[in-house]
Length: 386
Image (cartoon, rainbow, N blue to C red):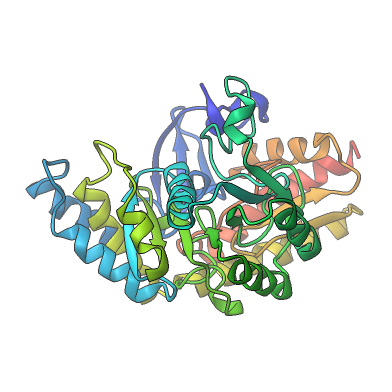
């Protein structure tokens, strides 16, 4: 087993193979049921087997999916995204988040005819050689044109840009700092606005990597609430509620660059995921999904805080409540977090000890309360070993 879905380094109670899902519940191949707080590591935003999404996908599947050319649904989806995401004038589709971030960088370089790309220290933007966190099998030349800054530290971004002279093609940034194994950090709006101004001064692209956060924080893009527009944005995960799809959205300045590169894939034009995406976006708006996730996430956060305090344990809950993360004080090796996750899983709630969690619009008050019964048992157990 490979990648982030290899559970060999996770608590033993977390299953490697799963059988089915419904709403915010999943069942493993042994029949154990869990309230799901990983949502397939982000793609499931409306809940597993969402009726409207499945109906749209099945309707398209009866006609065709992978063909010699795209279906009309591709244009419909592009129009939908451009109407929903304020900064976007055009859309390009792919399959994975790595496809989207890599294409954003390629478009930026093609437009600016420059080489250097600024990324935050420790940030994850995919598994291609230019950005993979594990460099085994890559060469130093794969990332010779990457420069680093510190998230929420505008001075460090300015210094990195100055070191590149007039060769900066893009600055890539996540909506908030969600590096694995670290407490999360919300973006400072002043920092975000500063990156926007810096890119304008440099003539470089501001690329928002919305692969993980897109459609969970706001429908119009994760930085829509703070009023900062990127030039390019990368999307995947929740864009089609579990169907394989990614998108690059861009403004008109970067349209010629997108038109002048060669990117493709045999399955990039498949129609079923695009139909699912349209239904996902419509359902997100119709069901007020972001507000639903916020309410459920806050209920979970409040419950966890009360339980930890009752057991005399100090925890740190970070990130937006739709994408929460919890760590124990001084638990640098994640021993307590792993034990907590183990006990919670044995009581029917699926969390992760080192990666941010995900809420979906399918999480009800009853689901949160059921999960809090599992976390109560987990805190009680941790209190005996802390």
